[in-house]
Length: 426
Image (tube, rainbow, N blue to C red; front, side, top):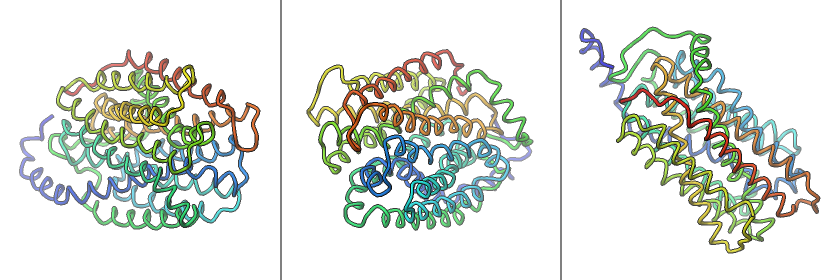
């Protein structure tokens, strides 16, 4: 899509002003997404401390972990139209500061209810980060760089997952989980203010070269267009189960399994879980680059990668008894690596709709992604809690059954996604 000939000088002027600070902008967006990823999965390694200090069962732990995702998912409903109409600067800054408050509330909580409120506010606060970043990419960069940029920011976000593994175990051991979240809140507030300052050029109506300037689409019209497309539901189904299974393992249940069933210490379990993030950080830019180098391949690349992710879940189901920690380290790496191809689901959804509602399309997919995290984290907790247990220790079969549910969920959702319409980018 080309800019209007009569607007070349005007567009070039906007382009010069618009891209004045690409690296600092990308850096702060990446830092915010890394922080968001840290807060999402931070209950995993400190789960024993949370269970002890707040007297939580497996079902309660699952609900507490899911609170972040419920509020995050709910906020995706207005997020896309807000980004398309108001712009990423104001939306991101206000929401991120709310997340900082949530971190402080979580740190100060002495009850299950208080901790849930903190997690809910964290989810609300972080709900804008990735979608606002994608909106900035859509505005600032050519369409054929979107998948690569999306992969790069997800790679940066994997640092948050890494910090939520072994480093979080160290911090919790050294200063306690409460002070750790006070520190996280302070960093969140600082980054929110920085985003407000750096994104001052990102106002509604500005567009990157090649997008043109078009009439805005109303809130309800954009939602109707997105929700009325079958391929959107096929993409969202894959997104729901892909992220729901992964974040449930990364954010809580795989770490508990390694400590509870396999006898690993929190530090060793954190080292193993960290390989999920390492694999993810390697796979994300690779997946994006492959898709961008081969126009029209977004769906195919995503489908192959996610199919291999589903297969990587199979070794966790306990059909073959394996006790070597190295085995779980290898499995975690490949789970993270192939899961990262799911980032292309954002690009696939973006390619199906006009640029004017790109934010709505991607945020709508993100709603199902985060809903998957909320539902699965809590559902697995309920499932595991059904089995006889002693204190906070659960039998191996309970975990293995939960992992089997994850495997089957991926298989059925990918069968549905396989029939979706490819994107239009060529």
